[in-house]
Amino acid sequence: MKKTKNLHLLQLIATPVIATILLCTTVSAEEPPVSTGEDFIKRIEADVTHLNTDELVDLAAAHPDLELVDVRTEHEIALTGGMIRLGRRTHYINRGWLEFQIGDRIPDLNTHIVLYCGTNRRSPLAAATLKQMGYTNIYNYADGFPVWREKGYSVQSSDEYVGSMLYRKPIEVQSGVWSAIGATAPPTYENSGHNNNLSFVIGTDAVMVVNASDNYLLAESLHKEIKKITDLPVKFVVLENGQGHAMLGMNYWQQQGAEVIAHTDTADVIEAHGETILSRMQFRNRDKSMGTELSSPDITFDVMHELDLGGMKVEVHYLGPSHSPGDTQVWLPDRKLIIAGDMAFHERLLPVFDDSDTAGWIETWEAFEALKPEVVVPGHGHPTTIDVVEKWTIGYLTFMRGEIAEILDDGGSLIDAYKIDQSAFSHLDTFDELAGLNADRIYRAMEFE
Image 1: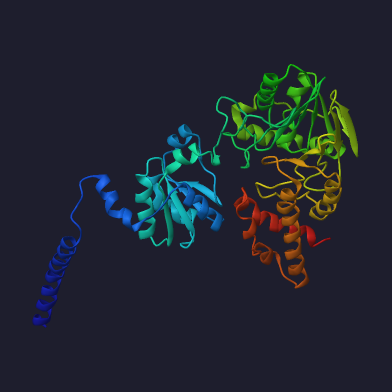
Image 2 (image 1 turned 90 degrees about the vertical axis):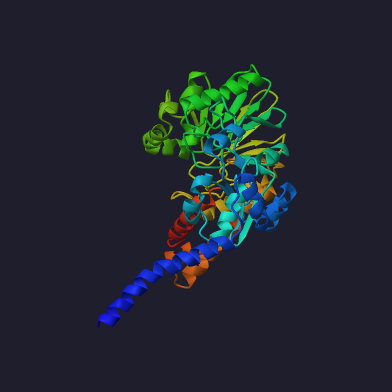
């Protein structure tokens, strides 16, 4: 018995000694230590796949589900004007938190991931780290954000028009037709609720604004931009629907002497839910909500309302049920241009609400298409053509309704609706926020059609 105890004691003493010998052997077998970060980068860069700007663009074309990770500091991102907009999405993960956050952001180890910074110092190290963690398709964008921006490629920012509450400065779509393109992200304090398009049309006598905006101060900011272009008064403001970012700023415009025009259903939504919508905006926007008071449209219509801005004929249409009650389109027949509102989407995934009529939306599209617009200014995103918005609006609705019809015919459940493969639309902004909700709402509606 004593012999056995002595043997155990020897084993306990020998184990750390052996471990120490093995550890020393391992360290001595490794490459010699380096004293600078530059030397360390040189050591690991052979194990990292590096891309220049052209190669990054080609990779994104081959893999639309590509995800980028910006490892710079938040201050750097704000100072340099944002992050790269490419592929499915771009994540901000500070280099110091990469190992701890990457698994929650991108759990699939086979995802194509590109890391970048500003000077090609942190991103090679970050790429090497992810490879060690088991990610299989890792790339380092060696040119970095400054080169991407210099070449004029798309960027994303919490605020692209510093010094104004507008997210972006208005652009001229056609002569006399302008639009301040909002963020395609949800409304935030940073974007001041400017996450939809605020458009305006200049005639020879007056200006018409489409969407009163999310709040009083944002409406005032838009008006400042209009005044830089023309001295003509804003006489009309058209609300595309009763959502907050379309209607909450109307008391500003009414104070300027403008008449606010809306469909009767939009007016009903404002009356029924306006106080709740206002409270939510005030909670989100805090000090930026100052001056905003709930108001009501001055003019309502059922089918069409005509305006004359002086040398510019305008038709305000309600073509039928679609995204939300009272969805309105502004048609310039002489220009073949339509300010479509939430009838049309193409840069972000369309949201389906509880009061959306997806079947009616598809039917209404025929009337929209019959106008034969050559230029479409959507409710969200940049101006485009009808074939583009049809692909990502009606194409999406037709796909989802077809999939859910099969589920219902086969006796499936809501769980099956959540499993629909929507990956063909995953490159669109707000996909992660909306895909599951859309499946839920379309399924519940179709159960009772």
